[in-house]
Length: 315
Image (tube, rainbow, N blue to C red; front, side, top):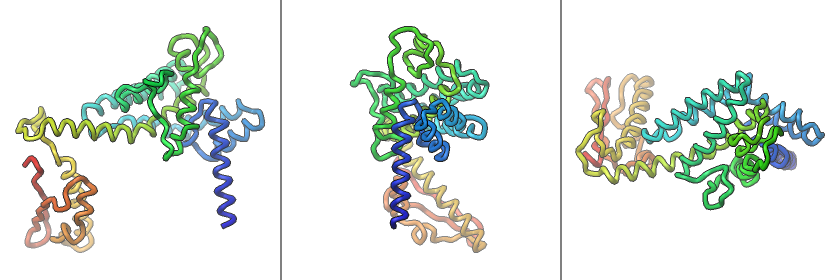
C-alpha cells in the first residue's frame, strides 16, 4: 500500500507539473506520451523551454502522425447520428486533411489558420453559438469539465487564455494569439512548434466536443421525430420520415444477428431462445427500447437459418 501510495503521489505531482508548466505555454498535454511530457516538464524546470517545445512538437510528426489522423477521424465521425450535421463535419475533416498536409510539408503559415478556424467552428456548432476564443462572458463556451482530466479548469480554460491574448500592435513575436494571427497583427506565428501546439489544442477540443455532439444529435433527433410522428411520408431514399425506434431496433437486431452467428459456429445450428434466455429486458432498455420490445424469432426446422424482426412504434 505504501508503494502504491508513492506511485499515486508521483503521478499526481507529474500531472500538476505538466498542467502548471506546459499548458500556459500553449500545450494541451493530456493525450501525449507520458514520458515525453515528463521530459518536457524537466526541461522547463531546468530553464530549457525551447528544448521542451521541440520535444513535444515531435509528438505530432513522424511516428506521432497518428495523433493528427485520429483527431481528423474523430471530427469526420462527429454527430454521425445526425446526417445533416455530419455532412458538415465531414467537410470540416476535409479541410483538416489540408491542414495536416500543410503541417507535414512545413507550411505552418497555412496549417495554423485552418486549425484555429475549426477549433472555433467546432465549439460554435456543438454549443449552438457559444465561442471558444471570445472574451465576452455571455458568448464564451463553458469548456470546463471537472470529471475529465483534459477538461479541468487549469487545462481547457487556461488554454483559452493563452490563445485569447490581444495583440495591440503589429509584431513578429511568434505569439499564439488567435486574434493576432487571423487579424494580421502577429507576423511570426508560422513555426513548427506553434503548429504542433495548435494541433494539441484541437485534439483537446475534439475530446471535449464528442459528448457535446452526441447530446446535440440526440436533441435534434428527438425534435425531428416529434415533428414527424405519425407521418407516412418517405424521404428521397424511400425511408420513412417517422423513424422513431428505427435506429434502436437496428442496433438490437444487429446484436442478435452477431450473437446468433457466434452460437451457430459453436453448435452448428441457430438457437431459438436467444431472445429471452440470452438477452432480456436490460439489454433492450439500455439500447433505447422497452423492456419487452416484441422481437419475433423465426428458426428453420433444420436450425440452419434464423430471422429476427419487430414492429416499430410507427408500424
